[in-house]
Amino acid sequence: MSGFDSPNFKKNIPSNPKPMREFTVGAPEEGEVRQYSFGPTPQQSAVYQGPPQPQQHDMTLAEAEEAAREARKQKLANMNKIGDEAKKRIELLADIGRLTRDVIIGGYTFSLRTLKAKESKEAALATFSTSITQLEASYEARKQQLARSIHKIDGEPLEVILGSKSLDDLMRFIEDNLEDVVVEKLWSEYISLKEESRTKYGINTSKEAEEVAEDLKK
Image (cartoon, rainbow, N blue to C red; front, side):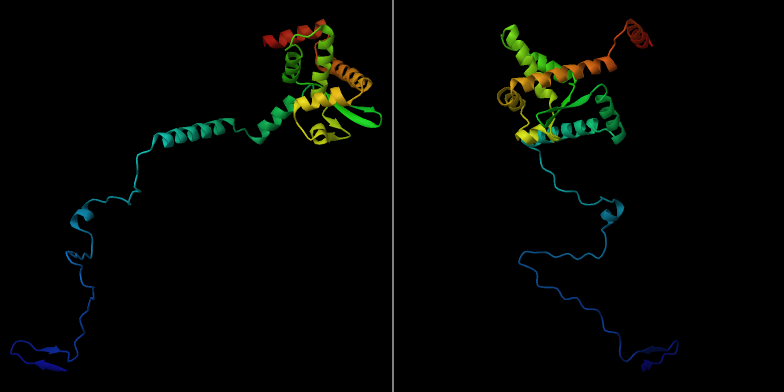
């Protein structure tokens, strides 16, 4: 190790000093000014600007309308959501008063069911939607109600057997393919089933009518 002497102090200088760090950069392009920074500028240190924001563009009219439609659709979906328990209660309430009956004719089992209020209304409106005679109306009413009442044959849904869910196809099946005696038998059983439902769930006596009236006042 080399050194030098001094009257005031003595310092040793290493013979192999630590090499200095070198940085190699490419030559700058013509007209380019390179700046090197090893830390935030005073302005950056003073105010934090947050993460970089995505570039935004003005929405076109079509995009705005589509966004509004999606928002309305989502709002409707949220409003229509019901829980499983509520759904079960609705299904139970919907089946109150609905009776079913199997009718065997010629070795085939026709499954009938009573109609809901909406189905009865639709059948009645369809029956008298055109100018027809009283006799024609009776046949039309029979066809309209049976098409909504027959829901299975030999345990298979009627739409599976016919290959169609169309009400017109169901009525055409009854009118064009079933013998009149078969239709008459099914109609008689449907009327009987309807009376059974009315007896079981309807108001049949003045006492029952008074009880309902008292319940409505509560």
